[in-house]
Amino acid sequence: RRVLFRSMRSLCRFGAVRKIRNSTQPCWKNLGTAFRRLPGQEAKSIQCYRRALRIYTPAANPRKCAALHNNPGNAFLSLPCTEAKVISRNARRALRHFDRALHLQSDQPERRAYAITRHNRAQALKRLSE
Image (cartoon, rainbow, N blue to C red):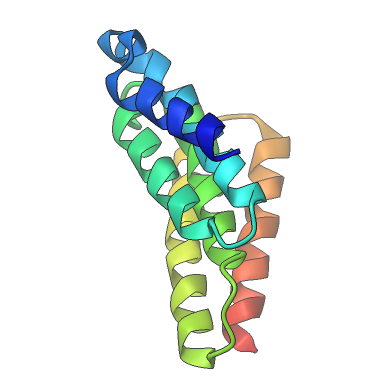
């Protein structure tokens, strides 16, 4: 697994796909998803998602940017922690991403993605109230 992730990271960072701006985003997004599935690697997944968000801007592609904001929001909610202060801080960070996604989705008629984001936001609010 380590060899796979190292090669994916190097491909995203230094590979030929870097020349085409939009083609690197799926690489960082996929790497973030892979890290999120491994136990204890949630922080690395958030870093990968943030790099992908630097590539896709709301002006260039609001739909993909909105969908991408859900990923770090969910990653913040899945960070393992036991302290109430850390849990609420992560929930607030997740809320920022979900709110940004909802703002970007408000002009689009895609109801399913909007409903999923609203559900994720409700989960973050629930985490804040606990």
